[in-house]
Length: 432
Image (cartoon, rainbow, N blue to C red; front, side):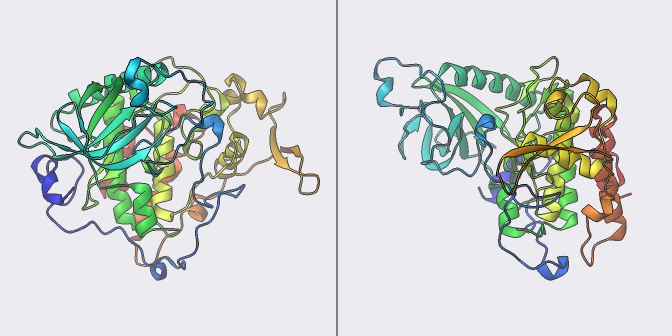
């Protein structure tokens, strides 16, 4: 979508420091500026803190969906054995594939209004297409993104909850200022629930690949995006909503790259007493309280945002653990041992700690290739300065403030973690 298409309704968005009619926001570091040569992409494996770039999640975490993500529309992420029953009804067999995805055609008109123009992605829950609104109103976007939910009962119920959450968020943000993707409407088409959104330019994973592979973005750009993310988190908290899958893939930017919006609420839920599960949130961005089996709330999303900010600045994943056990090890390598009160209450603690609360790291023996457990004690926290290294020419005060923000977000105890209100008032965001 062109910049002009956004100015009608986005030029009042809170947290944007430049007008949308201006040039692109400066996001790119040069390799020389960062002291790092442009290199080939690293793999995550069992690397340490800040190493690697994301690989696909394990099968037991398949419900962490990238609905606006990178999977080509013709590629299936899940097999026939996902245990989900397609809701059949007569001629619906001709409309859906064997897994309940809608078999759309380019040029097809949905709901007598939206003409499908291009593929946009495919995930576990849905297919996403770009479409032209043939009945566009003044001030509304002509190009939209339509999320077509899979035709089965489980996905349909999840889609209905997503609509409830999106309606709550949109109703509390009538002026479209809170940096959540703009939800326009929903409708039923050939037994598929369809969700209509504004169409944005690219996600932050794509921005990183294009402008900051292995070196990250300018700190000024990270600050601009951080402020907008915190505004979105504040809006979610005010509405009692947990996103549950914050990562660069689920953050969209406009063509000028100066407006960011949080998207993909397919895993979102209302805060309260929710099911304890060790696989909520995509693994690299998963807070420790999730892995340990503790009750979770808004601090979980704050942890995920912190992981994203590090990744935006460095171009590397902070916690590239291939398993939950590795994730806990990496968390402790950064912040030291977990408070005993957390370990005494977690439902899944015994999977990673013994009765004396010593951590058991699960590792592969290099000779036998069998997995063994190694006790790790006396874990000392790292100095944040050794993890967040500055680039030449950057404002030293801004960098120091970023390190302080980073340190306060990554507190293992969610009750002591920085809140979104504190983050919005932090000197890194305010510039004071």
